[in-house]
Image 1 (cartoon, rainbow, N blue to C red):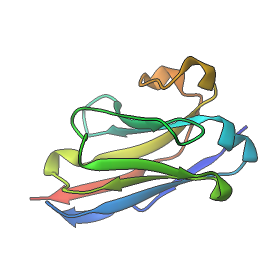
Image 2: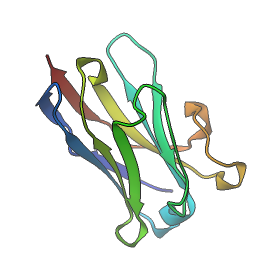
Image 3: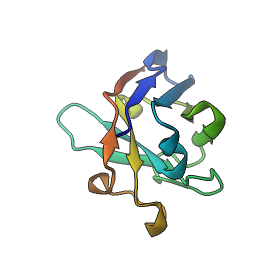
Length: 126
């Protein structure tokens, strides 16, 4: 069992930056690929980015490529999402999730992720 806790959300103006953190409760976290997803009001959960358990490989949704950076510090059991050049359409609840099937490579389907955090709200004003 892995518990994930997101933090770092808030209100920011368009063009601004935020850094989200995802802290895990268990050392087994270091063996899992970790993804970030988001859900805007009235919409489904959307893939944002994912990172391999080593931190050596990353994959991004086209909508955030070049603006967001995912990284991890396994010594701190934490994954980060640095978000720059934020747009109003980035407004959503952001979730981190753990994929225990790291052998399958990086995946972007929400159903592939077993453990989820409670989410953190990001609001970008125009």
